[in-house]
Image (cartoon, one colour):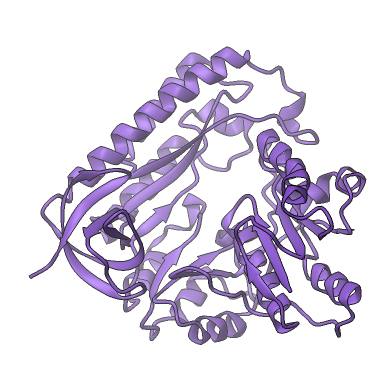
Length: 405
């Protein structure tokens, strides 16, 4: 028997899906994370944008084309937001984002197995994504996720460290909905980092709020045996007026100071970010401030998004900008992001870096440097192994590289 566990959305969803896969395999089933024929499907949905919701709803009809008789189990943020729409499409079981272990209980009940808890995730990639917390208390005015995921809750440091040492992956990514707020009985993310001082695996961090980058936190990262100096510091806008309307708790000046602090500790750091174009209160001058911020912060990569109204959020009630204005600004933002990525990668042409080989395709093995430059090496390298390379020139979404001699 085979089950496909298919995921839309964020890395946290991917981690949770990997846990569901591990649980289903304990029942003796084969699993896969790619759409294809299966006896059962688990669909992990997303609601961060309207487009994500639309794709989530379409998933049931997509999998029915592979096997109309298959049982379909649905979880995630889209089904948390609108459970009935998935039930109406013929799903055998639907739950939301907060109790995804219920999927395994429903699976066990359906097929006559003993119920079990959600195990550590099945690691399907070279990098292991380890979920350290869930939920968010920030309630940014554009974001529906706190209403769907609930309030913040963190795993214990002991359990996280145990999972990290149990995986064979060479790189660990600590992730969650808001890992900046990590709290294990008063112990914070800095304490968790200190607990990993003797870990030989490369440690990378998921998305952060800029206020965490103080001397204590950066010093703890500096003391790690193998830290990947990539800092995804969520920005969303370069305008103070828009940041206030978004309920983001920093100014552009404070954000830039935090970037400066990161570069003091890690001169080659990649600071990556998210920026939204077309927020309801955004003027043309506000948007220009976001474009300027890309240069001032020297971002290595920018994830550009057009604002998507989310019912139930404060921003949903605001007067929306015309669709053509949002689209035009998004195209300008994407163009600025591409230039920033090229400028950052070009700084490292001719330098020696370490990559962990991930996948082979079209004659190249690709992997990421610690500072998140995607490197393509000609030939097939052993997946999961670390290699020292020299970065050469732009290629596809990264650069070419040759093995260090």
